[in-house]
Image: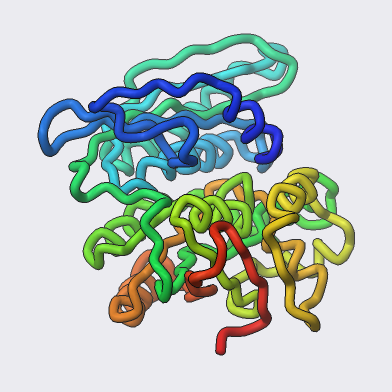
Length: 331
């Protein structure tokens, strides 16, 4: 579902409130947070989707990494996971077994435990996780803390929506998009640990709403604007080529519509590149608002460790909340 439709539905739903409830369905946070006791809060999230790669085991890994990403975006630690499965039994149970094994491998890599799940029979396979984690509220990251002058740091390259669409269309092979597949399998754990060490102002993960869509939510929640430097956004190999051939996922247009009234684009930026900034991502990277004095050490740690493609892709501005300006490069 597109972010605009989702926002309209959520805006009409009742909002539960409690002193222990540290998040709301209305504030755009990545996960639900409930205070258990002083210094300890429960963090919960859920995500699942149809296969985007051909190999069942790899699909399981990607879906699990994607589901746990919301936990890491909030600076939390995953503890347990529940499988969510929709599966056409005619395909063969060995396929499902490999999906589940792939998911389990990522849960264990995260130091969490697979504790059960639920399955239904469906016409199309779908897989994901419901994940529970914990965080000290004083150390929790939210999308609402970005401050004017903070730099926007993105930890992974962009283009998984375009490339998996091209894979389904037979225009690329799995080997040709192996960089993107490896990135989708990569947990955001180490990137989150880097951000925790440097006390970044705000954080979110870049998934279905695309880079601009998730940045828009961060800027709006932070009562700030943002400037994006299109030429600095890392792209996976073949992303621009496949996008220029029309391999654009359906979600891209919905993401653009979501921020249409808040976006301003500088002249001279290639339209194909702009479209990639709205590309819906699967198991994308983290996007953090980093104070200026922490930018160099944050990028150094990310690039030399878990995220060699990490880059400063923009800056938080003092413009009206949610205003997004896309420029070619920073000043």
